[in-house]
Image 1 (cartoon, one colour):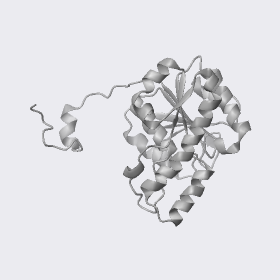
Image 2 (image 1 turned 90 degrees about the vertical axis):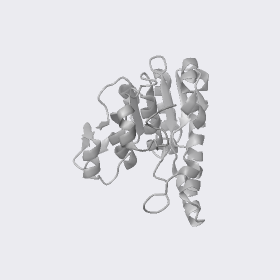
Image 3 (image 1 turned 120 degrees about the vertical axis):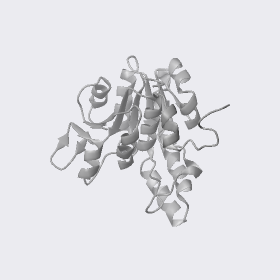
Length: 255
């Protein structure tokens, strides 16, 4: 078939640009909720059950992809893996295991409401079908790079973690809203919590502690659909519910 792409690489931006088309939002009604591993799951029943109750109450009005991250146990296994000299690819797979376990916990707690856990392959290819059967689906937020994980410039710790994996899924599906549930009420740049801030501005400010992976801020620069994310405090009752309703709560980071 005659084509400008014959015998050429699809990574050639100059070649691909002339035949480009607007990227279609696959699930424009999807709302993605990321539950932090260290921030929420590691805090035990009080924190987790409160977030689950808000998710359950939101089911009648929202169709959600709920993702989970890894926590302190992943840090322990990364420490052992580093001591053993394992490569970045192997470390990514080990850390992803805990994020998956957290996903199974959330799905089990919402099982009576028809919510189930799906593996990476299903989240990537059959999410629409599952969301026709249920109002929400739980998946592992840790991206399935495995052997294909690129080694970072310094050290071996994988840079693509659950926050980045969640963002990539949300952008791929063209989600309407992306919410990160953490243990802080947004982002504090040193002079108090800000309501809105640009990703580039936040990277330049370089606050001492970011509640999300800095890689997410870099990914926002080239995202096709997700132009902003919201960070809310899952330890504050009602914060997630307000975020899902589109109210001003926490911090919005925009591209």
